[in-house]
Image (cartoon, rainbow, N blue to C red; front, side):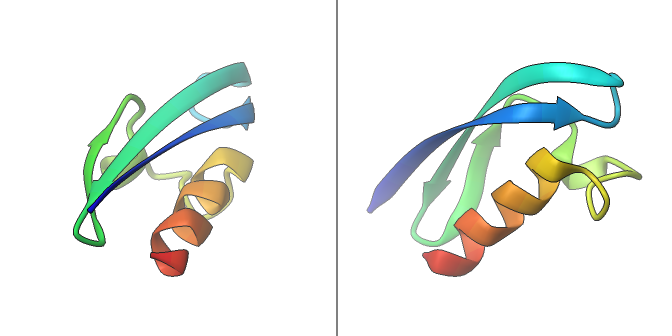
Amino acid sequence: MEAERFFTGYCRQTDGPRTVMAVAENGTLSEVDCLYEHCPYAADCPIGKDITDFLEQL
């Protein structure tokens, strides 16, 4: 099953607001239009936290 979500908020990597799209297939992140998977700030980034919550809910 595929799930798609859009997250809007502060991005720590770009130090500004943005919208990020994430797609998960079968409970695994398959597509994201930010550096979430390799971002050094993902744990402290509001959008990164939202993506992590999204993946945990699947």
